[in-house]
Amino acid sequence: DTAVSQTPKYLVTQMGNDKSIKCEQNLGHDTMYWYKQDSKKFLKIMFSYNNKELIINETVPNRFSPKSPDKAHLNLHINSLELGDSAVYFCASKPWGGTEAFFGQGTRLTVV
Amino acid sequence: QQQVKQSPQSLIVQKGGIPIINCAYENTAFDYFPWYQQFPGKGPALLIAIRPDVSEKKEGRFTISFNKSAKQFSLHIMDSQPGDSATYFCAASMIQGAQKLVFGQGTRLTINP
Image 1 (spheres, rainbow over the protein chains, first blue to last red):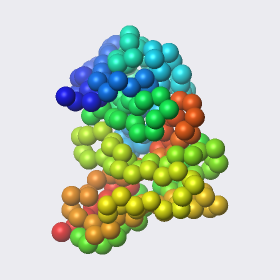
Image 2 (cartoon, chains in turn green, cyan):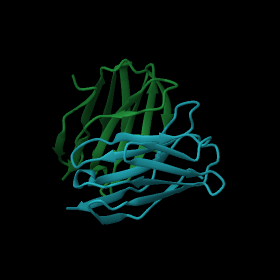
Image 3 (cartoon, helix red, strand yellow):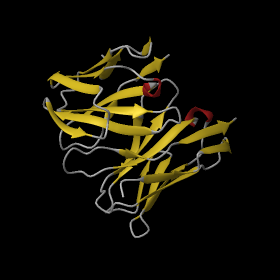
Image 4 (cartoon, rainbow over the protein chains, first blue to last red):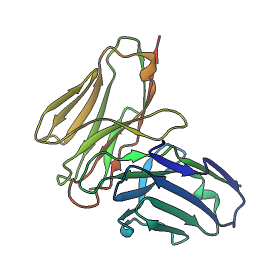
């Protein structure tokens, strides 16, 4: 009965590959986010969707493409992976107009 | 203007001590200030949050102090325990709209037994 679940938890891949991370929430929330946590643990917003509509798109390389097939799911596809993409990626969700954001357990992406 | 500055980067306190973590923000449009706690291998989890219309909020052993004029807020942990050892993040956002969280740099807190 995990609230926000991400798959996979770990991802090791070679430079140049394309990979996807999936996120699902069972909280009935309208708004979902992707955050990136770098090696210094700094957390930064990447994208946000509300009811399948993209509402935040920070200055992220266009190799990153989020997709929300429905309001319970938010996926992140990354093309042509680079060494600098190595980080922990967190999915989060919250109700629109609410305040508390619930985070998944993270996906540790390592590009070699 | 979107930055939140957090200090210290790391903090070691004896059990029972009162660690204090400080944050400062620039954007006066921010009106929601949460603190998140993160254990190794886990996602951040909301610990306590405050709105700028109050100067202090307590939940159990955790207290936020808020100084609107100075644009600063801090987290105090009373009677700290080894189980409180974690990384703590302050954040700020605007209640209206998409409410993206702008995080501080994080504080790695160690409570020694």
